[in-house]
Length: 493
Image (cartoon, rainbow, N blue to C red; front, side, top):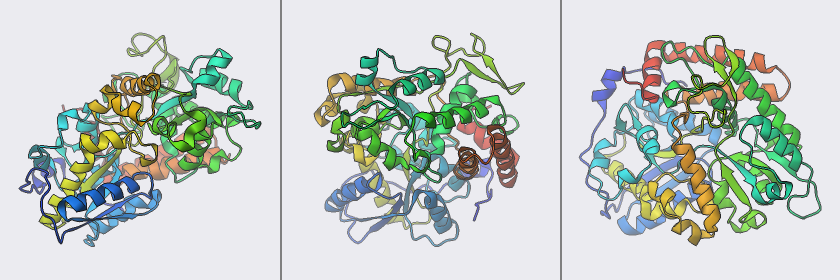
């Protein structure tokens, strides 16, 4: 089932159901049950369970956390809320999916809740996550529990031994990966891998191709975007830039594990923790996972850096790759255009607008409790939670990280790479319009898998994606999609 456009933007501005919300506090919620649906644990779900037990002791509210596979999560939430079943009170999901749900009037407007919440300290939430991750059309519909974008991690000790520097672009990536591939990186006598990128279909692997493409496609700042022409909604995918990103993505497999096409995120992270990966593309989780007991082989041996970029970028008029210069790539560093990609944007909680009023308040108070610095500044330092930094205090103060087991040097390196990404004027936003999951989680994921399997060329893949994206845009309505896409990029004129 697909949720069609049911409201225009003007209607959305006045249609939100705003509850009279009290400050988030230890209220008496005995007899109240909050049903939450998210992805399978321990990542994301398990910490919700644990914080839910704490919240129950404080308030009496029963927090029930149910799980479904990632590939089913969006459709399950959409079906439950759009059909009126309403068995789910809270969804914790990819923030980009919320636009379609808000567009259908399915999510509670949390603006007043936040305004009356004396504990959440919204100003401490990093601006990108506060303004882009939590808000739609200027109103808050989501509460962040995890801040997501991808970075490059590298074995600092191995690069030092080889006299190599972390790669800044994809040519350097391939050279560094090749130099490490086949060497024994963890001292167990077995040959290991220069590059580890999980590539299984229906497993979030498509985020890495978008992270790669961003540096080829976006040069003029966040407002430019990597997916569509904001004036026409014509896809910006059928061109040399995206095709080159596809080829790079596939080429990294030369230095990867033999069964990489079937690796989910857990498979790759297990290899990383075992010390078997020289380079890895992942979210912020690798930092905390390196100090987890299972990551003893890489403790204090990892480094982090902004995603590699490209000295050749898209000329939108011709669809060709051209060399960077000061005009085309105003944010380039040493001639290389970087565009850190907010892959996924982050896991966030949203509340079913049809839930009972007291359930809504209890649900908000719980999401606030999870988000608050007292809880989240600890949770983001624990690798298995899947929670990555999103508060300024988590990035500025290394004390919790050192207390968790980071060395001071790695804490500064890791948090520095995150800040460099977040502070980039050319940071690329994930897709945040109705149909977001269909554009990327279905069409892009499908054609990427076909390309990796050798069924089609890179050029055929991007052409097929363009065709599929055009169909989705027409289905939802080009004019309304354009309006929502412009808003997602911060374009208000």
